Length: 104
Length: 169
Image 1 (cartoon, rainbow over the protein chains, first blue to last red):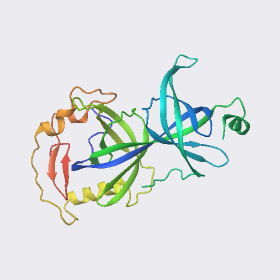
Image 2 (cartoon, rainbow over the protein chains, first blue to last red):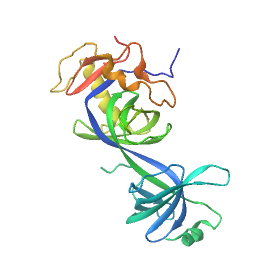
Image 3 (cartoon, rainbow over the protein chains, first blue to last red):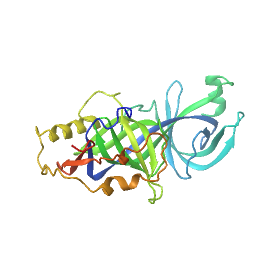
C-alpha cells in the first residue's frame, strides 16, 4: 500500500538538533486600532506576553511589533469559536516593510 | 491609524484584515530530500505553511515548509514533533535547506565527503532511540513514520550528521 510517497528518501538524523525558527503567517481581523493598542479577532489563541508582528495592508504596507496583553475566546454569529486578543503596540516598524524574505 | 482611517481607506462595511507574523522556535532533528522533522514547544495545525530558517554548516538556510504532521511528544511536556514537507517554492540556491540535504546525500554516496566526515558506521541503531517517542501521541493525520516495522538504519556520520535509511538496507 502506498503511503502518499513517504519514506522514499534517505533520512539524516542530526547528532545535535539545530536551533531555528519557523515563521508562519495568519490572517486576522482588526476590530480596533489605536496608537497604543490593537484588538484582533483570530482563529487561534495566543499566550500573554507572546510577541509577533502585524502587517496592515494599505497604500504602503505597515508593520508593527506587538505583544499579547490578553486573549479571550468568543463566539461569532455562526457559532464558530474565535479569540479576541488585545495587543500592545511595542514600536512601529518601517512603512513598506520587508515582505516575504528572511531577515536573520 | 485608527479604525476610522481604515474605514476611509477600505469602506465601512469591509473587514479590516491584517497579517500576523509569528516566529516559532523549532529544533531541526531530521532531514530528508523531501522534508524534515522538527521539534517545537508550540502546536502547529496540519497544513500550516511557513518559512523555516536554520543554521547548517555555518550558513543560514531557509526554505518554505508545510506542516504535514503534528504529534505531541508524550511525557515531555509541551513538546511537539512536526513533520514538515519542504516546498519547492524557492530557487534551489545554496542557502536553502534542500541544498544542505543534497550535500549530505552526495556525501552519503561517497562522492564528496567534506572534511571532518566520520566513518560509515553502517549499523542498526537501537529501535527505542528513534521510535520510543512515537507511541501514544496525538496523531492528527498520517500514522507516525517512526512506527515502521523496519526501523531506520544509520549509515554514516559525516561531520556530526548521522544518516539513517528508512528501508533498512
